[in-house]
Amino acid sequence: MAGHSKFKNIMHRKGRQDAVRSKLFSKLSREITVAAKTGLPDPNMNPRLRLAVANAKAESMSKDVIDRAIKKAIGGDAETYEEIRYEGFGPGGVGVIVEVLTDNRNRAAANVRSIFTKNGGNLGETGSVSFMWDRVGQIVYSADAGSEDKVMEAAIEAGADDVESDEEGHTVYTAFESLSEVAQALEASLGAAKSTAIAWKPKVRTPLSGDAVSTLLKLLDSLEDDDDVQNVYSNEDISAEELEKLAS
Image (cartoon, rainbow, N blue to C red; front, side, top):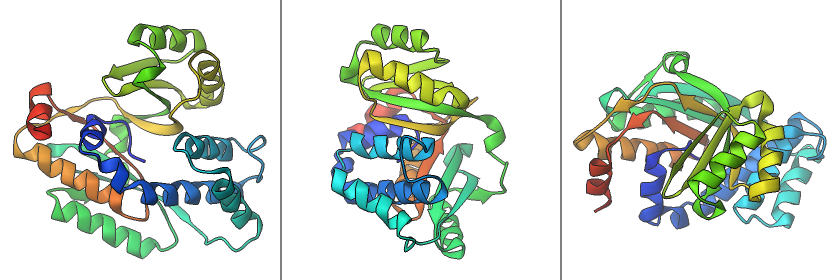
């Protein structure tokens, strides 16, 4: 469940989504269980659970699997998960934020640190990167939701703050306090979103080129592959030429 990034487009073109689908379902189920455990087990009364269920449905998770994840929390037999944020720098000084949901803090910390070290990065202190980002609501639509103009118009009508569009789709940003209202308004005009979440949006981006591009991709891939990692955000700025080199 990576943060919106051009690297996501590369991963899609390489067919990587098929390889990680099972892991994605596991992370979505974990988020549903934690959301249900920390609030009411009713999506209508629990905004976090409502988002988690919506995101699971967007990935075609069955109702039975979703219900089992909620019942796991109700039954009291769910593991106790801790939410932790790690921050660091990847190749070329690219900022990286890693959100973890783990039942073993020591294991998670060791794994995240090791992944950074092995892939040309270094883990920093809390706050070393996040000050360069905004906490926002993020609503992602696939390209077939409409043209860039159509989505932009719908976003403006819904009260969103910004829209980023590319060949893979559209990402709508809003104040995180307004996420639920904006998401509902967009659904009325564009249909169900691919994902809806509280996310990190970089205020500035770091230019990256050459070998550092592929090294950063390995770092982000490795982080996403870790079982404890829920979300990864990075602020790289890579030219179209560099992306084409990597995709070829």
